[in-house]
Every structure is written in structure tokens, then in C-alpha cells.
Image (cartoon, rainbow, N blue to C red):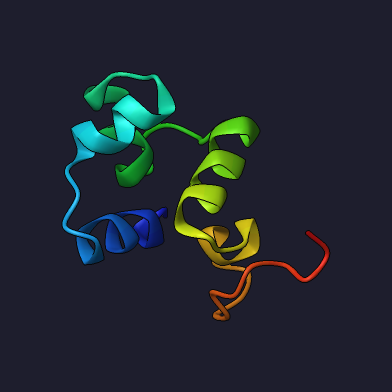
Length: 72
């Protein structure tokens, strides 16, 4: 379900533990986000969008445009 967060991480040559540290969670918790085994809390979704300079809609697969929202 959350294929895009994995793709974005891998495109930047980051490890799951790098994102887990940034998000202040365990690597296991972050892995479960990527696998769709755990829903991503809103605050984590927003943090990921800011980290990757993209929109939450892109992360959720609601758009294919990775540009950040123009309302920010």
C-alpha cells in the first residue's frame, strides 16, 4: 500500500533505520509502514512529506504529481 515511501527512501539510498531515527520510531515500526502492515499516523505522514519535499497526496497514491502542495 505504501510503495511510494519505500521507493522514495531507496531512490535516496537511505536505510529504514535512517527514516526510523528521523521519525523517532523503531526500524520495525517503520518497516511495517512500508509493508502496509501498519497504518501511518497523520503526523508521520506529514513528516515524511516534508522530509521528501512532496505532498501527502503523492505518498498516499492520490496523485502521480510528486510536487509539494501549492497551498503550503
